[in-house]
Image 1 (cartoon, rainbow, N blue to C red):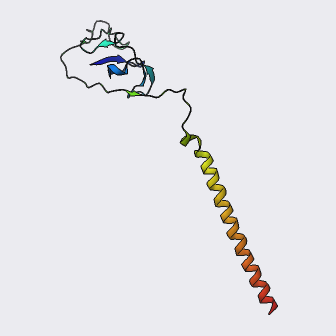
Image 2 (image 1 turned 90 degrees about the vertical axis):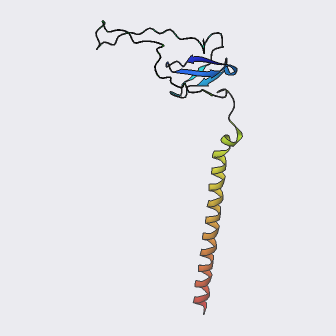
Image 3 (image 1 turned 60 degrees about the vertical axis):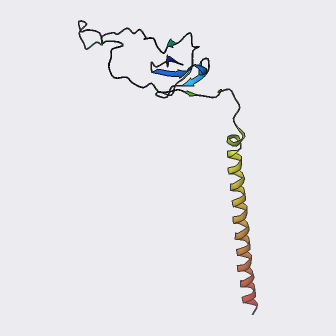
Length: 132
């Protein structure tokens, strides 16, 4: 059975009960937050209580919006679990700049070798031509 929570920005999320107590990311705003335990969150069968305030441009006499009415239901997106941010980076990502550097060095050595060989052939051709 799932639990309902809100991210710090107020987006309503439906989360599996097995994810309670872990860190997660809101799929709408991308903010990381701690998922509360199942007893701290609202039960999936209950309705949440909300207080509506009138914006400055509306008169205060307007009726408050209905909460929990029988309107169309909205599917609440699931949440993505993030690994611990304190973990060390993986070897593949930490060696990536080193591999690029090694590849550049290898390409440079090959290019210089080809250039030296070409210049040697041209110099030998010039010397043999002037000798005859």
